[in-house]
Image 1 (cartoon, rainbow, N blue to C red):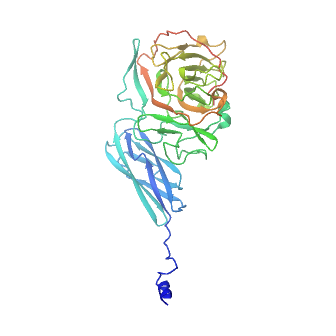
Image 2: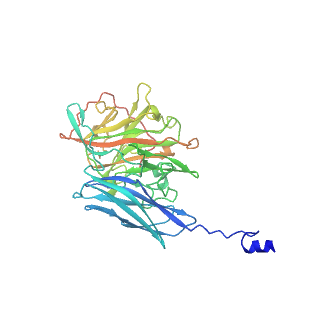
Length: 428
């Protein structure tokens, strides 16, 4: 009788019913603090995480813009485990002030909010504040466009950089990688990360003033990034440079580069007619005498020089390596002359003019160009990836463009020109 009474009271052998966890979600924005310059813009990654088996869509409203500041899009739909980009733009008449941008996610009866601290200031996202003029001989080059990659950890600014996507049949070089944009980038391949993380994303700002391009192997597929200013920023003449620490290219596997294509490529001029200039290109000495970490190759590609190109080789002195320290790779570019340098723009190691081209060739380098940063995996110069495991990234400290009042480059070459034959190119 006592046992029956205890059972009826819920204290016997039967177990009390447990309330089931309610499906829910959480919202996150990256970065949580963002500076936007007057006349500039910045990209924010908005993501949702499922809790307790939540699987519904989430409608997110973005509010809190101050006068002169726009949020686009102001309404997005998220699926848990994915991210989308919201662009914050400050017009020329925007007031320099702080604000909180609120992201409100709703799904059925569930509503959650998260916030972003926004600062509007007078510094452009491509500002050169604090960057000094570079003097080469008697010519002063004034900084005009600078990507310093400062600010909190987060995705690259998609208002400054576009992204090539996928494998595109090996990009003409038998490359193996799948290129990814930031999480939420339109038409990102399915293999690419859907939420922001410095441990999984193939390109990100590290929070310490650097851009990082990190090749990763996901289930046997190499993922990487190729980012470009195409259709966003064009350049013509002046001094172009980037400070980069590359992955170790002693052995085969990776093929990092900082290079350019003619802007008319975007309007239908084919490669190599549009012109390609490689400021920094590196691959293993095991493949076609690559420079490896002790050197660099710079090359131009034109209609007649094609994939072989015409270029020069640079070797570091004093035991320096491209993979253990930052080095500056660039060009002094004037009408009918390009002077490529490493670390010292006053000492170009490779100079080329139309007179160096084969008879009947055309010089395509008096027109606008756009810039490209990438790390390829495999390919004609990347070689085999069979021994590639957890490679170090390509880390970029800055990318800058300077112009001179004269519009002419007057640096004097101090090294002889070297020509080499390449069996592959960073072509489209």
